[in-house]
Length: 265
Image (cartoon, rainbow, N blue to C red):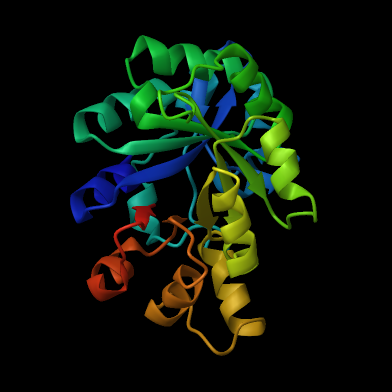
């Protein structure tokens, strides 16, 4: 919660989060260990074995984040009082702060419960749904095909890609995606223009803090680790929003931000 509050304080337009559905049905906001296709492991984050999917909310409330400089970019003292929040708690804050929330459907069975919660809270205009599992956002589209007068979808969905295949635009159109979320170093001008020409919006997502250190150290030596040079390079692709780790760097260099760019934490 402290990170989301800080994002609001410094002037971000919104934030992205990962959602899991616990075995009791509660929706929680958590990243966890593992990859995009097998996420939610606890050990390096909380010092206990297992997966968050196997717990109920009473067990999750007792979990505490542990210092781990391979995962957390913040100082260890900031973890001492941090807990794993429910999606309801985070959305209550975002509604008051008037921030956009990109909800990544990380765990299985999150589509309908997340949709129901967003609707109950009257936050359809403030939220969008995304996933690497495109059947999950396709399910959202099947349940909610509503369109605005201009033809855009009322319920916004984003198809996430690590490395987009050649036919990614056609894939996204087939599942009714309203946005395409590309990994920052796959945002070419040609891809972004093709997405916009197909009537969809774009977002560049950056790896976590430790992953970005790795990329800046070993892969991209002509730019810094999410410095203004890296941000400017990605912006040149024409992408309309960016989900980044260092929003303050971008906000300190407002000359970089065009009218179409949105900043997310």
